[in-house]
Amino acid sequence: MKLLQWLVVSLFVIAPAAQAIEAGKTAPPIMLRTLDDKVVRLSDYSDKVVFVDFWASWCGPCKQSLPWLQKMQEKYGANGLQILAINVDTDPALARDMLKELNVNLLTLSDPDGKTPETYEVESMPSSFLIGRNGHVAVKHCGFSNSDRQALEHAIEAML
Amino acid sequence: MSRALYIVCLLGLLSGLSACAEVKPWQKGHLARSHMAFETDPLESKFRQHVFQSKEAASGGYGVGGGGCGCN
Image (cartoon, rainbow over all chains, first blue to last red):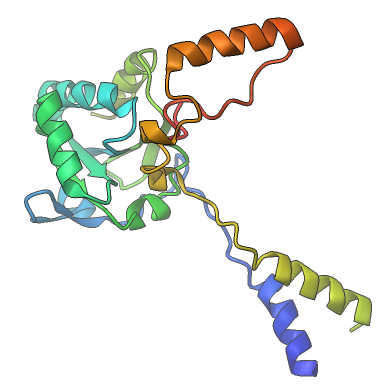
């Protein structure tokens, strides 16, 4: 009985301590496969400013954010920006269809199990994290609307 | 340890074992489908809400914005 009592109490004491990924914190490692099955790690781009964007085919604002991200990659890619578009659809074919429809060819990683958004504690779709060359999250952004474009572009420019 | 504290802890633990699970933002693919919406016609839904708002002086509570994905 005593053992059971301590077991019950210990379940409350050893509660998972949530450590939200906020600006200033070290970006958790990422290792995922692209839609054409190549392994990509966040550490592969340690010499670049990385913009990690979580998106899904069923997410309305993602239809606006992806073409904008494509523009940002084309504009700032030569200056050291790398966009990692992480798709969380359970069926990667849906991601392929949407990218084709939007004419977007970003470096897209597939995470059908949702382990990476879990690690990054994504609060809404889309969500994005701007990660500096020091590996720290500089900006965390939830959602996407037209009014966000300018502020996000300024943040990218400031990091390059 | 007092019996009352033990009972409180046990009840708290049991309440955590309920069938309700949190759906994370990236797991809302099925919820975001159009046929999961309460109203199938968005325009008709807007008219209904307008009439309801005028009659009842109350509004809101019709679901989540952004197609159920928790965005915006």
